[in-house]
Length: 628
Image 1 (cartoon, rainbow, N blue to C red):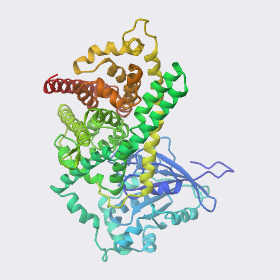
Image 2 (image 1 turned 90 degrees about the vertical axis):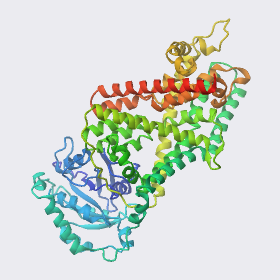
Image 3 (image 1 turned 45 degrees about the vertical axis):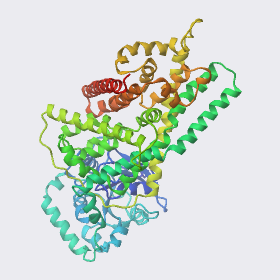
Image 4 (image 1 turned 45 degrees about the horizontal axis):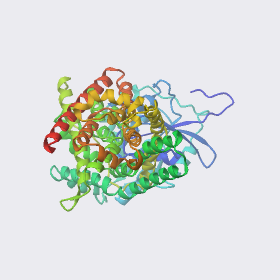
């Protein structure tokens, strides 16, 4: 990028490093960017840029590149890093300088990438991150000697600590401005000219003269992994951990849910008391509060679930879970590397589908994309919680377990089992290659940082509340309109909604869904639920609020459906939501990731078929067992 005459451009510095080296945490520290910091390889996939100004007043643009082990790319995220630093990526210019971030406790692995980038000829600074951990383990690193051997400035950083970036900022200030020393990258042939063996031999030579681990007190991570990764105890620990999470979702959320529910009920009662009966009051109480309030009450459960996911992610356990599940997933033709995208899908299928880019094998990547929506995303949780609270008694089983938590756990397991079955069928039908062994770096354990947890929960709450205040609110107002007009005839013997446009649509769909136990009210709720799954709860709130009159009207949806549905219908709807693809955003992302309409249409088709079949079997079996 040529300098503009008479004007100094803001220089661009790129952060490059191995996954798990703290690169993204350092980016956050420098720029104040509010992006999630994960603790497993592959989380940073898309381009992220920020800016900051040093104490001397010098401005910088900062580019956070995807984690990479080498410029000899084997995954799409490594290819992005290689193309940007080599100046061959369309739409990107060569960075003016590079900051290579390395893990001070794992230089043997990290220095290979540093040596490869050095051959490109760009101005560089080495950020020796996690030096606090290295010092606690008595790993001695001579930074001056290391700087001399590498031929670049070497600074110590602690990305997770305030002020831990000071030395790096000072080193950047000392770099010449690109106007006087323009950066020109060399060809990638400079990298290919040196073999991997020669590079590793050079890494070992540098470590021998610059570091000493004779006094290393031992790696606590390895000692913990003797238990966590044990072939017998490891899977048992993972199952117990996941089981505890689902128990906590119900047990811990009761009090805050009651407070939110009480607040919504209070607002509804206040409106009824001070506002005359009419369309506006109906819109506010039955439309907005009956719909949006029914969804808002589940925010505590969603935050509790995400707290545990973020905690396990930040402490370093999730890659271990991928390792433990590799054998199970290998049985259906997938790699354990697919675990991380699938786990992301428990939050939302969209980031899970995008995270599948880190999977090397194209067939594995496609199958992972196709089964990601079967993971029980957080949008399903309000539906599950609503039906479970209405039909499953809150009692203790075995003196320890909550029965409602047990049912929720079974629903999550059902989604996982279905995903494995679909993966098995797809891999066989696609004539996939044999299972590839999992190669995944296991980061060191550490206590999660409170800042990361708080930011992660705040981001999830903000996303949920934004959806409540935009998509869900808009759909609830539209549904209220369709459920209110036209007005019922003078001699009507059904609730007004029965004669409305929504009622007509629901009765038309009931012909299709009656065999699985869905009445016309449920059918109405399924339609707006196509935009986002949790919208169905708000839709049910609006529909049933408008279906009740007098003393039967309540803003709390749970007692309404408990009185209106049979147990067979409730179980059938749970089965439907385990499998049905009721999210148009997910299908659009699949189209974008696969560059074809074939796969989103195939996904919608097989998931609808699974949902209808599972609901039909569940409904008929439940009717038989209950004698209905």
